[in-house]
Length: 562
Figure 1: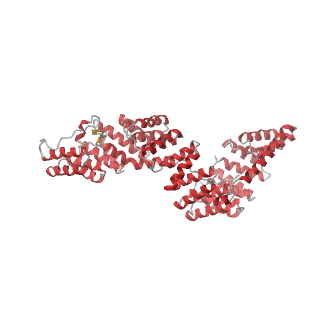
Figure 2 (figure 1 turned 180 degrees about the vertical axis):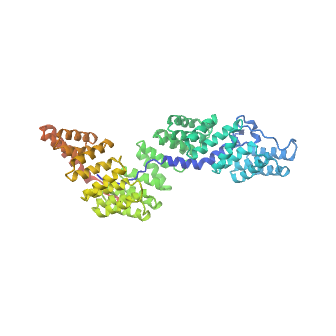
Figure 3 (figure 1 turned 30 degrees about the vertical axis):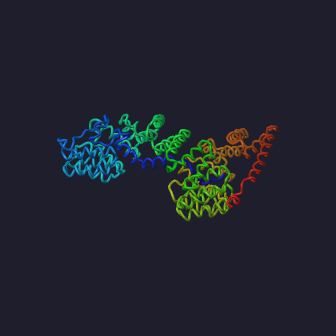
């Protein structure tokens, strides 16, 4: 058995989730700043006087003048009509004309800032909102709009400061502040705080998809999966859900291994925007998890033919390899390495593929190319050591693995690999010293105990210590069949009954373990159980022939390269 520093494509759902939430926070801010939908007021954030008709978020503000006929008041009324018609530039000009007549009007300064926010011009918005608050620091509508503008710009520290000032205001201000502070806390990975604040925001959280997704994400991080699922299931019934929001829901389901629900959310996202970044990759990953690799391959082939990216190419390579298409696997990994030469995963996957098909020279070439780009890569150096050992270049293998072991504190794989190389080189005492020292640093590493047992066993004079090492390996990992086999070998002469028990345990875990089959068959023959012994020996010989045939029929990597 040999350790290979393999890489797995795995699920990148958490990283994708965080990236998507960061990218889309501005869209949520715009959504809640939006004034109208089908001619009716629906905003929860634009705290203008015009929102006086909305019961939940009404924040009435005085008109610019007591006289409805004043120039400023007329400018305000005309500007609001233009806002309702979505003629935002004209509205701003009209508001500014009124402001020229009444430069101290906090209401006009606020509506100008709010209208700039609707345009997405948050820097300009801040300028007018801050002027409004300089004149009247207690003007709540302007403070709400300023807080939301900071949020839209990603200035969460400034936004949080403003929302904290609003949290003790009466009415809807506290709910709005709790909602946004909860979303900010989730963005900052303070999930306990986020869940608490979003829970305090009342029913508002159920009206806005991004707020609901932030709440669900926070609950999931707090291991409250049932509550998170209940929130996610509400998303389907919400109006106006964007593709990116369905996508995030899919990522959250995928994290919980609820792949069917994840796929449904990804399909909803695709129906709205099939070109959404990361969507095709995640759909393919979920299809593969659901046991539908051919569909996953189709999705990835379409994606990489038009918009190739390293993660998608890497997943395509893994799927192609699992379905026996070695040419596609090699082509995909090479393309991924060309696109992202500083990513060690591409070289690791390529060299591992070569090792699996016993093309060690090509595996070494891949590792060397990777190290030329990333000379300090711990994993690539350990991988190169594994390849050199397979090539019989044990001295070189030992040196590079020793070098790798000095690169990082968690060097368990390098130390384990070093012990294995030393064992294979016949440097048994060095191997015992290396693995014993490594066990002091990593006492829970079952493989270290196992390989220490192997080295001790090969000395032919430390059977008791070897048995102790194998027993500890079994205690730490009772599912590893080889530990039982080697322990049984130590008992064959001195305690055949214990040997039989361990061989049976080995075969329960791995019914095709050839060495255990043969050893148990010989033990049965030796103890007079001829029929059982002969049956096991015959099974061993059939399995041995089958393995030889399998090796002969294994696709050639050299042919696949062409």
